[in-house]
Length: 209
Ligand SMILES: Cc1cc2nc3c(=O)[nH]c(=O)nc-3n(C[C@H](O)[C@H](O)[C@H](O)COP(=O)(O)O)c2cc1C
Image (tube, rainbow, N blue to C red; front, side, top):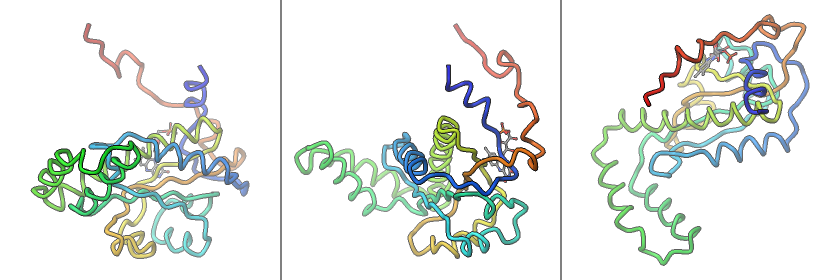
C-alpha cells in the first residue's frame, strides 16, 4: 500500500534544500487540510501559508527550529480564541446554503452550539480549537507524504511572536502549531539516513475482540 510506504518515507526534516514546492502541491495540501474533520463540523481554526522571507526571518527569532525560515513554505495553524455566536451563526448559515437547505432548517443545531460554547471559558475554548488545529496538522503530514513533499511539524516556536507578526489577535486567533514544507537536504540532514523509531505494533495497539 502506497500510503504506508509514503508514511515510512516521511520524517521530520531538520535541514531543507533550496528547492521550492510547486504551488499546485501546496494547493493540494491546503485543500486536504480544509477537508479535515472537525468537532461540530465548524472548522475552528485557520491556516496561514507563509513564504515572505522577511516575515519568516522574524517568526524564527528565538527558536531553535531553522526550518521556520529555511524551507520552501511555512504553514501556521491558528485556533479561534472564542467560538462566538456570530461565528456559529455564519457557519451554520453556510451549511444551509451549501446543502441547499431552507434558511432556518438548522436552527436547533445552531442554538445548541451557541448554548454549548457560551458556557465554555476562553481557556477551554482555546484548548478545544487548538486540538482541532492539530487534526489539520495530521492531515497535512499525510497529504505532504502522499505528494512526496517533506514536512516538519513544530511546537518549538514563540506563539506570542506569531500572534504579533501575523496579526492573529486582531483576527480572534492564536498560533497553535506550525509545519514547514520543502525538500530534504539529504547530504546535510543527519536524520535523512536514520531508520524510523516506532513501537512494535502489538505494543502500540491493543485489539479488544
Ligand atoms: C506536534 C509536534 C511538534 C513537534 N515539534 C518539533 C519541533 O519543534 N522541532 C522539530 O525539529 N521537530 C518537531 N517535531 C517532530 C518530532 O520530533 C518527530 O515527529 C518525531 O521524532 C517522530 O519522528 P518522525 O516524524 O521523523 O517519524 C514535532 C512533532 C509533532 C507531532
